Image (tube, rainbow, N blue to C red; front, side, top):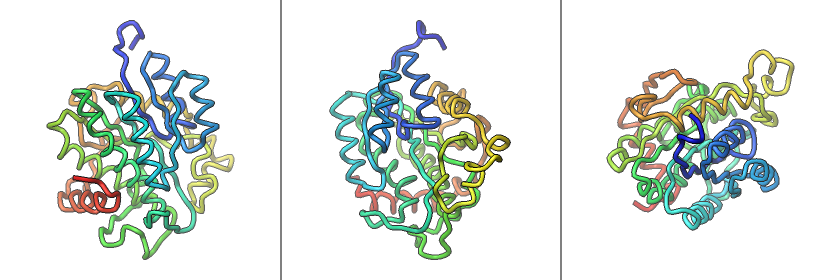
Length: 280
């Protein structure tokens, strides 16, 4: 896609201060898109913005009030959002509760983007045809979602908590498809590969071994390659390039049995509405 044939879009991209998020910001701004780059670190997000011309905003997804403030800032800056990329996420260590009373891994990876997406619904529907891309992970295979124990009070490990949250991303994508498709919103979830960043380096998960040892050269891909997968979904034509409501490993469609369980999808949606304080 060349700049001359590209119609500029408004793109809100979280997790933009590093890794595949920052790489995607570089690509999208270079094409002329208006990118609102969201990160937790004010300094790192500002650095990406200075390099690319993106508009920087900050939010800590461990605080839902930060998510609400972020949405207010986005709404004040644009009358439409053509693409929302829910890319922010983290593998955490020991089990902790956020100030909102939710298990931290579940909130940062699922509840916060769930809330942000809802708060930007009017801007997404105003675009006429909008895309919501959510970065999940192949780690969803480690997850078993217990609707009666979303705070993971039983059998907690960093790996299980992360896998559970990444599975929730996929069920959220299916739930969005079921509920917002008729309003012009197309949703997709994908795994970008294991990317060579500082992701998980300080966690108690075994994932950190791949990120902190010489194994990274064998196991990990670059931020640029991971970012190219992200922009492939941003640029793709739903229903032709990729199927709405589905999950992809890199660019390959992979069915997820749990996403076909309507009771599980609906149950997670209902509990997420309650926990995130979404007005319906």
